[in-house]
Image (tube, rainbow, N blue to C red; front, side, top):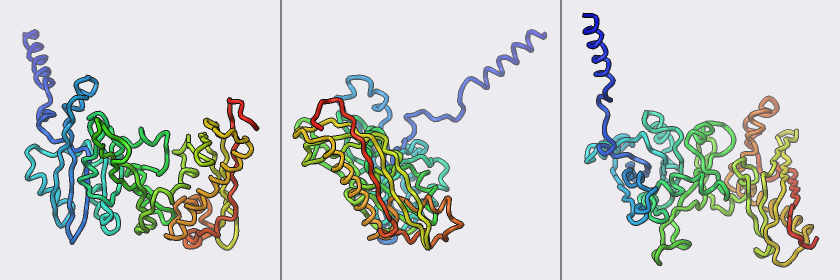
Length: 372
């Protein structure tokens, strides 16, 4: 009798552990990888980008290079973001699942006028994660979401979904995740920069067919929850000298006859007392000389390098003054550690005159016997 009861108990446990009740098969849902949001004439337009995960799973096989992976784009409009998504979900052939969204792309109109709605929507949607990449664009969002990769790889292998791989060794503009953006959005000093994407056909082709590849063109600037404008890549050139993400920075000098790589620059912001805060900016680093076609002396290269870095910083500082936003986030240190000395209005009064001194010291290391 005891053996019979024991067998019944074991079988009952196996019954309850035999499967995942209510679980849905992969092929029975539409997995959204990217979301786009636009706003015009009182209506939101939402876009969803869904990828074929069956094709992605075959990327290790050689056959995966012979057939392109399709991109499914959904589009709908509504008076609110939620209403637009609801309409889209009602028309879908398979349920839309947002738990795998990696990227959110915003139009210029949304960034200028509707950031509050975006923040509320992301905060209220339990499936949208805060570690999504955050981009903006002045182009058609659908065009950005259908951008191409190389060798018919899916969109997951582009800057849209994997910017770290592409920018790790060639940093220029900070590409942040949403959690970084929202952590400083309500801060009363400093700025947030949303990278701006464009489509480029000029550089790559496969079998003589031009590839439409997404690339960073500039950034949308927000300060104290206010839109400050769009800034092009050239005016943001000084950002890399005060970002921890920039660890190896390539530079060319003397009409591209000399090339160096700046390694792990050390950045220091010294705060100077006064009726309002002033600053000394210091950049120190080692550089590796990798090209010197004209056999220019190391001393001359070093001086030109220091001059170039200083000019890049000044260019971004001048742009900061023009749009009234602290692009280098210099004032953040004052706000965090010296709020008792100055109030927020004094800290935010930063301009070009607040930068009393810029010091750049670069030491060039080289293994080739160039002339000194």
